[in-house]
Image (cartoon, rainbow, N blue to C red; front, side, top):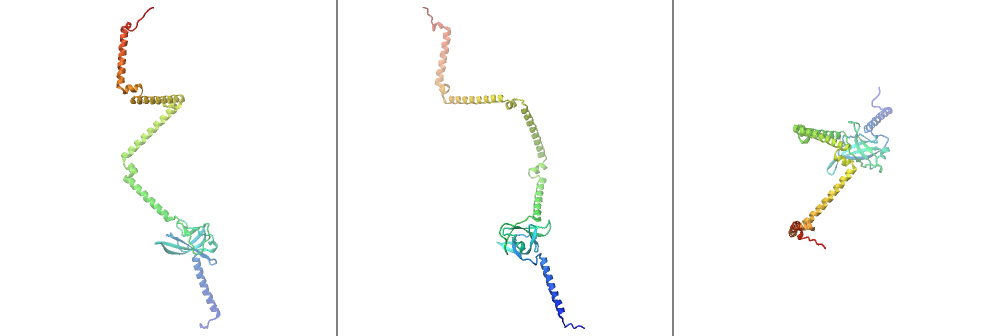
Length: 292
């Protein structure tokens, strides 16, 4: 029977290989669990945000949709009394040069309800180095869409409440019967006015009445225009004459403004009239004929 206290080299070798196998399996599990590669080095960069939107450690990092690394760590950080989350991104060295200092990262979702990941849009600057920060641009996700939909529904409910309560012009239009009837009458009047305008337009087009003739007959339009010009000139001359009368200028103006001149002229006309009457009665008194 074999003595348990006696150990052979083969038994010891078997135990050593077993322990090494366990250690290697544990390491493989750790590496695979973190989505990292055994055979490549990594470059760690960071992003800072107020809300990671469900991003978790070990989620992958991509450029143009291709995986180039993983999210290795999420830590809180306070900046100017504000709380932020700093995410460390481990990039495989073979792809790290694709990420530049002016690159922009965003947190996206695989499908509508899928896991979150970090997508990086490469820039044109210098490649990042260990520990560099790059800008994180907020991405409208499902939560933002839900908030917008909720806000829209709330506004719609408020509008419907106002309509039901008769608030505002639209609400009064729906709830106030008299206002609805008045609006209907207004629409009918507008329709009649439109029909009347259509009729007038047709008459103008067909040349009936004075206005169409003025529009279509050039000679009549020219004569009418000249008549209007003459009327304007006559009105201007009349205005000038009235101004002279009011200012006492000219013979008529003096007659209008000087009573003495008017009285003298009136007496002269009376005397002349008397003379003419006497001449008719006794012409021989004023006219004599002589023969040689």
